[in-house]
Amino acid sequence: MAGKEIYHKMKDKVKDAFSSSGPETGKGKTKLSGRRVKHGYHLVKGKSNHPMEDYLVAEYRQVGEHDLGLFAIFDGHLGHTVPDFLRAHLFDNILSEPEFLSDTKNAIRKAYLLTDEKILEKAAELGRGGSTAVTAILISSNDSVKLVVANIGDSRAVISKNGKAEQLSVDHEPSMEREIIEEKGGFVSNLPGDVPRVDGQLAVARAFGDRSLKKHLSSEPHVAEEVIDESSDFLILASDGLWKVMTNQEAVDEIKDIRDAQAAAKHLTEQAVNRKSKDDISCVVVNFHC
Image 1: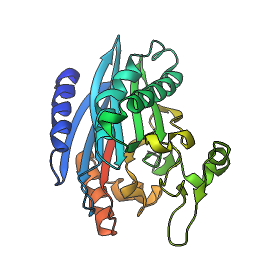
Image 2 (image 1 turned 90 degrees about the horizontal axis):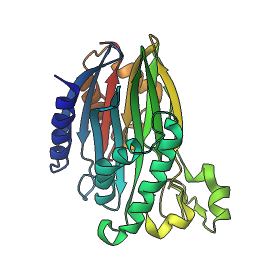
Image 3 (image 1 turned 30 degrees about the vertical axis):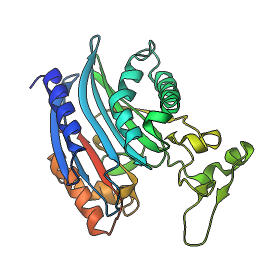
Image 4 (image 1 turned 180 degrees about the vertical axis):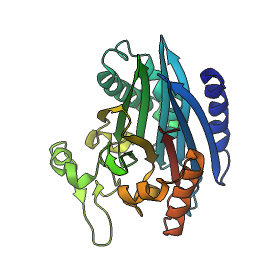
């Protein structure tokens, strides 16, 4: 199946997935610089009373002569409108940056900040909620494939290299950025039995949206680059519903012998449920050894 056909098919599947409160799953494949890449995803709604707030992207596109793989997890809070907006617009904003191919990391930073500005401008329409994000872009170039990961919040990207887990994202916890938050006039609460929270409310220090807290929050992403080579096994993107109950290495070990990316993503979500995760859980696995 051609990359463009997969893009439209995956876009339709992902769009359909969020109208349902049950588990959703899917997969796709392509070739990047001669390397076969397969991905799979799986989502499970948590035990909360609110609708599903996890959204994802799993697409293939082309920019000039470069084939791209685009993957993301958006974990919303106080509503689903902001992660849904991100699903629809963030990658378009990234790819439209003039220096996307020449300076990908800076293009992503600029697009994250621009997208957050647009969300805040649309606060009357999108509501007061917000979202974390982790994005991964595979870029084919000649005979190589580059991976660029960016994130704000606590959705996480982990790559397996020769069976060893390496975290490519940063969990933006309020306690880690207490000084910055306090310099902006905010505070970090740390009540017994609870996690640290910005102004006693939000459990992450960086996020899209959250207009009422924005003066104390950042939307500046952490960005990392990685060359995909023979040591690269697979990539895991997942919301914190998975990482609250599983370490990076445990996640890698759980799926290291599962060749099918869709089955691997489903297995991870099921294991998180078995470990009593009550949050929404979304997971994308991208396999580099196909």
